Image (cartoon, rainbow, N blue to C red):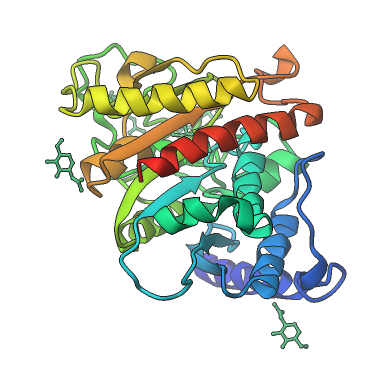
Length: 344
Ligand SMILES: *[C@@H]1O[C@H](CO)[C@@H](O)[C@H](O)[C@H]1NC(C)=O
Ligand SMILES: *[C@@H]1O[C@H](CO)[C@@H](O)[C@H](O)[C@H]1NC(C)=O
Ligand SMILES: *[C@@H]1O[C@H](CO)[C@@H](O)[C@H](O)[C@H]1NC(C)=O
Ligand SMILES: *[C@@H]1O[C@H](CO)[C@@H](O)[C@H](O)[C@H]1NC(C)=O
Ligand SMILES: *[C@@H]1O[C@H](CO)[C@@H](O)[C@H](O)[C@H]1NC(C)=O
């Protein structure tokens, strides 16, 4: 019965996505906005429109489906799309945590600049392909937009019927649920086995379709050299490891620190406050996070977490960055992305 329900939801949503590209918002006209936070379906329509308008530059695909059946879309910008050529790849993602809305516009801005302003950024694309994943957690994002602004997790049912959702960024298969035997005193950020907690790690490593799909997708990318995970609201740039305060220092610590500092400087030149650069554990200890997984399991040496500034009211913990900040922050992050791409 439950399985039946899931299949039905999946089909309905798939039809809805398919239609939205062709109906009210004709796909070849969908535009991107930096004066508001776009919805999931608006972003999907924009991605499809980019592919229609720039078929030689953009390939839009799906890496799987969320719990509620939304497609986990990605866009690959390449001078030779679809071909399995050996060019290095920079991967950028957003919206693992549903309430961190400000992570979405900068990745859309990156896409828009690379595609619609292609001539100006041709050098970057000669260096590497850029893959953008706008939503790791589309269900949570729509729930945050429509029901509960501070929603963070996905929308999976758990062992406790009154508590929904797994923290996708505690669900990756690397030091998963290490909080059980960690030396560190657990904080509210580490991870939890209580499904009512915001950092619930899930019943098993990579138990969630979003996490599993993303792990498989990352593994499938040939020559992935640079990975930047966007987050908010504790402004800073971090790199592995974060699973324990006694985690080993990576041998290339200094090189990674230098890249982070250069990215921060570039953002500062565009008007940002400096981004403190440090390893993840110095920022905060957390287990089963994607930044660690990418390095520890997928072997991506340059794996960064870039946490964007907070904004808005304290009632919303700094997650409601005003829409007037969307464009400036997107432009600042773009300057940092250009630095990251240089080292891809
Ligand atoms: C839009 O409609 C055209 C023609 O009716 C069809 O060929 C195309 O597959 C549709 N595209 C999407 C994304 O639905
Ligand atoms: C990755 O980005 C998401 C926001 O989209 C954030 O919630 C998550 O904490 C980030 N990763 C890490 C390791 O913090
Ligand atoms: C389920 O969650 C409710 C609401 O937070 C809580 O009161 C209850 O103790 C939980 N039950 C179990 C079995 O954890
Ligand atoms: C969570 O872990 C604690 C030990 O750290 C254990 O006592 C408890 O039973 C666990 N709860 C669940 C729901 O697994
Ligand atoms: C990653 O870094 C290590 C040294 O820390 C190096 O031996 C290895 O070749 C690097 N891997 C890649 C894919 O660059």
